[in-house]
Image (cartoon, one colour):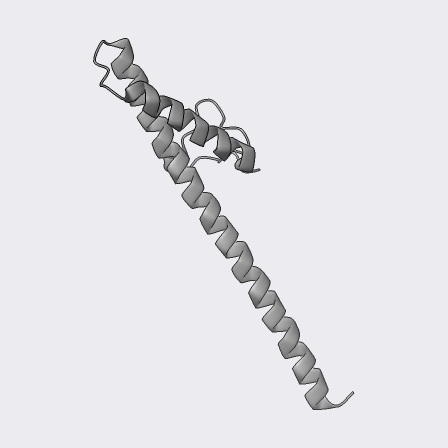
Length: 101
């Protein structure tokens, strides 16, 4: 194999690795965005629950709560269960991740 063939083969390998790294980075970005959205949904669901329990429920809150629960179920189906007490916004571990607080 000539020098140019070796250089071409190495360049191809590097391009493939760069493409894989780009895909992994995109997947991680999508996961972080999904966690943040789920965190926001949990916060809104908590607000709705609090207002309902303190007699301050607004019209449409029950329907919105049902919608939020369904969205969070879809999140769990894709990313794993949301752990009790976890907060995505505090830099803690995310559901389904192997890191710990």
